[in-house]
Length: 97
Image (cartoon, rainbow, N blue to C red; front, top):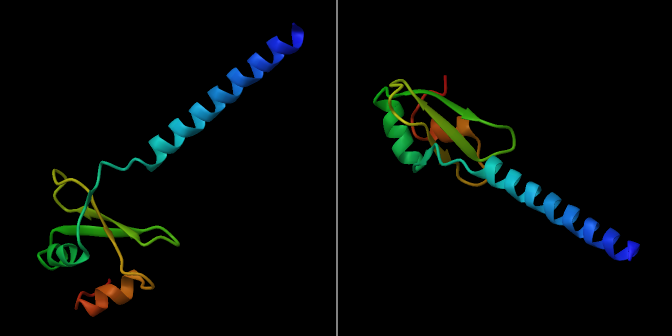
């Protein structure tokens, strides 16, 4: 009887831990606040003077785009494979500074 109670308790804890981990991944990986745009469109916005800054985290090909107009939603774009932000901006004729 005691073993059955222990197994049931362990299963309940296991299910709770898996649920918490799954919920954590959903919250952390859910970035719906930023619209995904093609890099060429972001370059057009940079040349038009609409972009405040581009932010790229280390070892990531995703770039966050912050706009000068605070009412405009943040966006994100994906760099081409095996490239870096400075080189891609330079190839589009944009000064990376």
